[in-house]
Every structure is written in C-alpha cells, then in structure tokens.
Length: 100
Image 1 (cartoon, rainbow, N blue to C red):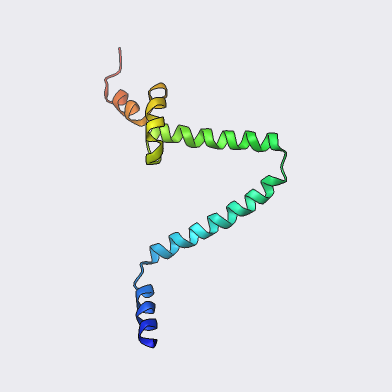
Image 2 (cartoon, rainbow, N blue to C red; image 1 turned 90 degrees about the horizontal axis):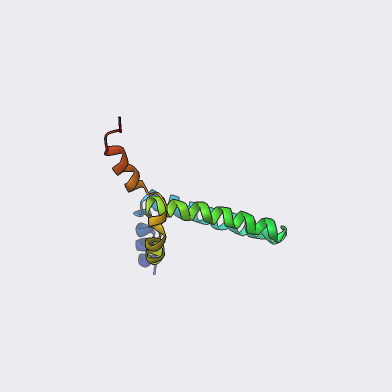
C-alpha cells in the first residue's frame, strides 16, 4: 500500500505549478461567489436586477465584439452579431484609406 501512496505523491509532484495556481484561483472565485450570493440575498431585488442586467449586458457585448462566446451560445450570437460592431469589422475599416 505504501508503494501506491508514493506513486500517487510522485504524480501530484509532477503536476505543473500553473495547474495548482488555476485551481487555487477557482476555489477563491467559488468562495467569493458564495459570499456575494449571500450578500445579494439581503439586497433590494430591484437593485439586484439592475446590477445583474448591467453585468450580463457587458459580458454579452464583449462576447459579440470579440466573438469569444461559449460554443453552446454561438447560434444565438450568430443571429445577434450583425446588429453590433465587432473586432473584425473594426480591423477591416482600419485597413481602408481615409476619405479625403
């Protein structure tokens, strides 16, 4: 049994430091989200709705502009994206010569 424990310990030691950092950040984000949810439960629901709307709007517009949305939302963003500016259209416009 000690041999198995040593090999498991060796496997853990071979994991890159970046993985542990990402795992730690994920745990901190989870704890912060729980804290925020507890505080939000005590908030006025109107203000909570406004804050959620603003945050989701910012995230949504960022996804539309950069086209870095999650894969399951791509069909929805494909329908919405033509109505808003995007990074690719901005780059294309910058390549054109200015009008005199």
